Length: 233
Image (cartoon, rainbow, N blue to C red; front, side, top):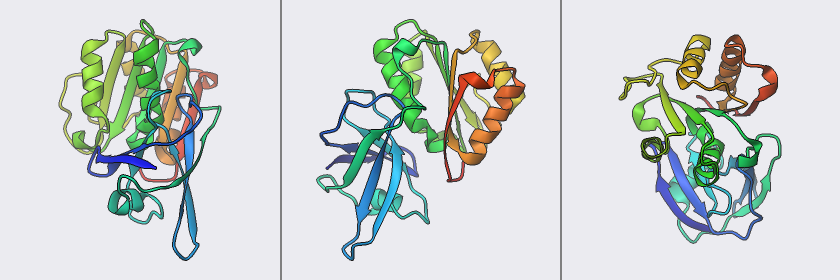
C-alpha cells in the first residue's frame, strides 16, 4: 500500500510504501506491477532508496512515454494498493561490513540505490570515507539535495559533489560539466582516498561514460559495479 507520495524534484517523486517485506540490503530493488481494469499489466523495477530497516522508499522519475511512472505522479494517492515483489538483487549492493573507502556515482534518478547506501552508511559506518558524486541537468534537479548537504555539513567522513550539466553550480568544488576521466580523476585526488568499492548508477549512456572515465583514471575494472536503466540522463 502507498503510505505517502511527495515531490523530490520537478520530475522525481518519493513514494513511501507500507508493506510487509523482508529487510532489504542497500542497492536492492522492487518489481512493481500495475494492473488496469481491462486486465492489462505493466511492470517496472525500482531501486529502494531507504536504508535497511526503514519504511521502503522509491524515487520514481516521470517518463512521458512511460507505462508505470506517470501513475505515481498523476494518479496514485496515499492508501492505494499496488503489487510489489522483492527485495531483489545481489550484485549491486553494499553493506557497512564490506568496508571502504566507497565512491558512489549517480546520474539523475540513478541516485536511488546509492541513497540507500548513503543512509545506511550514515547509521552504521562511523569513520568510513564515502563520496557521492551526483550528476543532474540543473541544481533543482538534484534529488535529495538538502539531505545530502546537511549530511556533508555534519559528518566529516562524507563528501557530496554535484556535477551540473546544463546550468551553473552553486558551491565551490562542484562541477559544471559532464563527468569525464579528467574530472573523475581530479575529484578522487581531491578527496584523498583510493576507493575500494565503486558503484555507478544511471542511464545506459551515463554509466558507459563514467565507467570509461574511471578506467582512464586508472581505477581497476574489478572494483566497479554498475546498475543502469534505459531512460535519458
